[in-house]
Amino acid sequence: MDQPVPISRPPAGPTPLRSRLTIPVLASGGILMAVMQTVVVPLLPDLPRLTGASAAAVSWTVTATLLSGAVLTPVLGRAGDMYGKRRVLTCALALMTVGSVLCALSSDIGVLIAARALQGAAASVVPLSISILRDELPPERRGSAVALMSSTVGIGAALGLPLAAVVVQYADWHTLFWLTTALGALGVAATWWAVGESPVREPGRFDVVGALGLAVGLVCLLLGVSQGGTWGWRSARVLGLFLGAAVVLALWCRQQLRAERPLVDLRLVSRPRVGLSHVAALLTGFAFYANSLVTAQLVQAPKATGYGLGLSIVATGLCLLPGGVTMLLLSPLSARISAARGPRITLALGAAVIACGYAVRIADSRDLWMIIVGATVVATGTTLAYSALPTLILRAVPAAQTASANGVNVLMRTIGQATSSAAVAAVLVHHSSPAGGVPIPTLHGYLLAFAMAGAVALAACAAALSIPGDGPSGRTRRAEGAERGARDEAMEGA
Image (cartoon, rainbow, N blue to C red):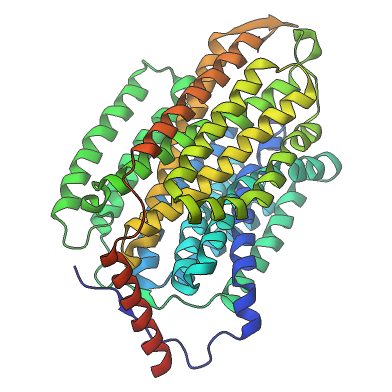
């Protein structure tokens, strides 16, 4: 495989002002991406009435974003490594913005689903941004910037729900998408203006066959996971999807191992430091997602259940807001722990804190203040874990493969979240009782969901501790020094 090729910057490089704005602009893009993924949630109960579609069709406004994001994240990550990370990042934000425009202009469910699929391209924003930070920042600034970038997923999710709920409650629902359109357009312009193009690329031809194979395999897998509860886990459709995913992904792995320029370097993934990091990402994604998913349902449950608080969607969003603020404030702490003890320890600590948060949820899920405390503790652990994962990847892979490797890591989180959603739904459906003629999950069902998520968090902690020592070897340090020297020469030549 060819070595990373430094490219010359344009003669007019970024000004000091633009350089100072690089981190805030990239972080705002990550927050916007997470907001975009959650804004449709408050609309789901009313969308059947607003669009004239069935509840099953409306659910695809969430499923389409999940599927397209899972497929496009590793694909766009690889494209960024090959053709320029800023260029691909800008395209991803532009696709997200186009999707918002279509949502704002239409009430047709088919158009809305297609538009939400376009918005799924934004899932690649975080891995691409982290790769840019590796290429652009000196080592002493890189850790805190990567930690902040990783935390934007939780920050945006915590901000998006109450923001969307307020807009939906007091304005026409299309206003929500006009707002995200304006934010998206601003993000595209700011990224192109403030972010410099990465000087490191990996030459070669894009693996179209690999991209198509991965797309088909992931769609079959995630469609089966996300729709299993609706279609039936033993239905012919779901079993056929799982069988198709197994066959296609097996053939895809064979093709990737034989390809000269694979979409995903499976030999790199087979290394314990990379492979175990991906396993930990999957388990952490599962544990993290159960927090917001279950909390939102629990506090909105009717008071007649004996445990529900009957809160509105706006109040529900405010319950999750302290967790988002905590993620923003604690990201520098995560970077300091990783610098002092290594990201492997930070990841293990974060997973253990998530498990402690679910222990709090099991101990008391009736009082609002305890619910908020438990959710915030889980968010704290998520901050530590999510901030450490990309740092582990950055230390374990060559600079020219950081975007694609981080894209695979984000993909594993997405699979974990999809699996968490299906597992939590199965638990709550199985433990439901009628209240006012409608089946409502019991408190025992919620506690079982918390216990399941806590157990998965402990498994993530064990996976993190199994990762080999993450300190860079002498050869890695020399390679990074050579890369920096090559970039400096290219910049001087420009």
